[in-house]
Length: 307
Image (cartoon, rainbow, N blue to C red):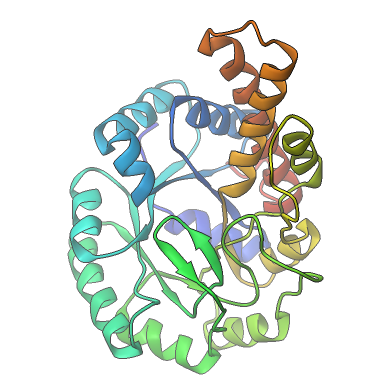
């Protein structure tokens, strides 16, 4: 099945009260694990490529991995640029076959964010490509995206931003945070803010970044086998599932995949120090990615059987 855009995915998700999982990819095993999970759950998928992943693996390599995966799948799959920092990178991804891009101008003054987003929208829409933008700022660190504090999205400004920029979906800040160290105390999402944004933008697909739940069993596994990720804490999955029923149509997952992959590899090396064949430790790591993505599809997105 060829790549698709997310429009019909989001329309159904909004109507039926679930979200689509947007899973970051960096290498073959992660692509395979995500695709296997989607196939077993019969779920639509968004494969996200960050600027860092693109630099690490190379856009042509990643697109060929996706192409190979699609030959064995009948799932609807979107390839999306995550946190595109500028027009040039968005253009390169659009020209390279991506069906969706995110232009992240959230660090810019409001009017500059609108202008940059509008420029990407005009280029993308002429080529049938979806555009996600961001308004508000998430605390935490993810590759080139870094902030020491959150700036929650203003609902009235969000409605104006969508109208003036023409973006197709909007990432909002309601209490999530990038990275594995999200909260010192209890997690809390601003659901009244989300509900107001959804009321002002009826039927419009909203996006949650920084939405990994950082499962503690994998934190413990990492630490047991030599890691140092103490204090890592994420967003409870029940809060994310609730958000998916209130207009959030896309939920990003990156940290949890990395955590499962790395914990599994650490465990394997501790138990099998004689191994040096990458296939020996990457095979169980790939299985860990699959199981993690299945968990997210079922318990967070609620999109099993929606392919």
